[in-house]
Amino acid sequence: MLNLWRFINKYNAFFFLIIYLTISFILLIRNNDFQRASTFNTSNQIVGSIYQEVNSVNKYLDLNLVNDSLAQENIRLRNQLKSSFLDDSIVTKLVTDTVHRVKYEYILAEVINKSITSRNNYITINRGSREGIKKGMGVIGPSGVVGIVWNVSENFASIQSILHEDTRITSSIEGTPYFGPLIWEGKDPSTVTLTDIPNQLDLKPKARVITSGLGVIFPKGILIGTVLKSGVKGGGSFLDISVKLATNFYALQYVYVIKNNFQTEQEVLEQANKESLNE
Amino acid sequence: MNSIIKNIIRYILLVLIQVFLLKNTVLFGLNTPYLYILFILLLPFETPNWLLFFLSFLIGLNIDIFNDTVGLHAASCVITAFVRVSITSITVQKDNYESDPEPTLAIMGFRWFFFYALVLTFVHHFFLLNFEVFRFSEIPATISRVFLSSLFTLTLIFIAELLFFRKKQRK
Image 1 (cartoon, rainbow over the protein chains, first blue to last red):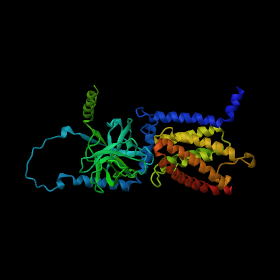
Image 2: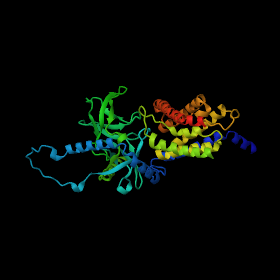
Image 3: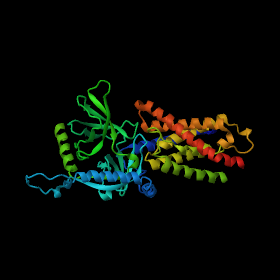
Image 4: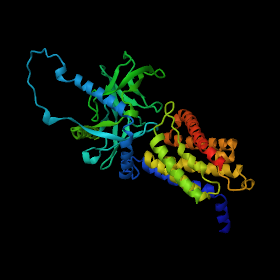
């Protein structure tokens, strides 16, 4: 027994290494589990409120960039107003009042914490389940798509940003019928890759990449970025297109969470399809 | 007592700098400095092993909590602590020094400190970035991130050490 104790004592550093490494790995693996609500999460109250305090100071530093992006968004929206088009139509048509059937609602939220430089990046916002945010909702910024809601607590929510290896946003190139998933390869936080686009497509540089409207998360036509360059990888029949993201994650201060009022209906229907196939 | 207070202040300061300043600082793509490992580097030589490992684990976990990556920094910090124990037991003979030596640039000299900081930084970054990606297919890209991030961290470590270098000489 004494000899065993001496042995442990002599190589104590090694045993400490084993003990603490085991604890770390248990924490790492438990926390990776998607379904488990984590206790150590920035959506957790204490860390969330610390970040909110720091952010209230920090946000003045980016004020110029944030103002710019909000002003640009205003211009874009103003250009879409009916009053900015010349009204030359003489056709009268029946207008159906659709106000009671709004499909997408937007919830404004402020970014209180973000990571950009990791392999998998998350953003924390100051809205949570109390404001009706649920897991899986889409998130956009003033200039383009940002990510998908990942975990929600009462007052905070964390977003899995486009800059994450598991995020796949179905997108297409404006004016073409083709669509494919968007992948971040973990090299540069301003470019992502659009895959699965057939290579017969004649691609113009600077073409706009937009959300495809397939699926239940994003409405059709929200800007993701512009085409940088494209090429066929290894003689395949699909293009790999580099896309420059429209969202500048460094200056991201305000985001909109998209609530789809018909999400459950669509999901239940699609689930029923799968089940009847399996039978 | 003095040394304990100094280390507590260093701990708090380094965590704050890392979490609120360096977290999204980027050089060439995705290379971030992890300056907080300076705390593990500068713990005095007479720190018992159990305390060294506990403190390394603690500061790693602390960074993790702010980064939503529980266990990632903790694991790489513990490995760094183990390498530190091995290096100091090989290279430092405590009898050669009159009063308690500390692993700082001012006391141990440039050559020793450079070697020490280089090895520990590289080990920490290697394990941190590889645990984070956790995929064999991305190892070449990760290694280049390890080198550039290490360079960035080392520069900051030496700037921090040189800032406090003169102060100790004057004493």
